[in-house]
Image (cartoon, rainbow, N blue to C red):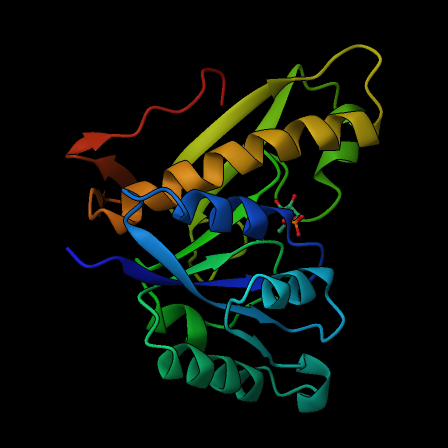
Length: 213
Ligand code: GAR
């Protein structure tokens, strides 16, 4: 099976992008990073990707005003031009419309810094602390039109410690994200994932998620 051509969509720092790029350096990894696309021209991650010799594209959403679909048509054109098979959202902070989501049904992943369905949306670490959660974590899921929903492919749980601040908890979750996303992409790119009734199966077996979620 040829290596799957992956686009990573970012808006900022790009540390998950770095983790995915590093994973694809393994000789047996079933995917390669064929494009890094940012909606923010100054995103640190896009400069880093350029330095690593990876093809990059910037589609600045601000130039499309309120026309979200026009922005997405420009993104889709880049994805097609680079013959992309799989899209990984990695800190891509734009809500997508059904237009783009539909083009990538079953082929677009997102990573979210919480154990979904808990703490959808922003400020997940502060909200987990506020709620007194005992565990927190990260989720890789297929993208569907509804935000932070979609079949869950993989989750990693981390403990919430008594003296945690938002920053210490975020760092613990981020380290887990960097392990989780490459593992999840490996499964999808290897063709081992199917979705049945909204649930992900790997090699035909429902994925097991951390207890208590
Ligand atoms: C990551 O923690 C990712 O889970 C989160 O943004 C961060 C991006 O960091 N994504 C979301 O909150 C999406 N709702 P990175 O740019 O260093 O990968």
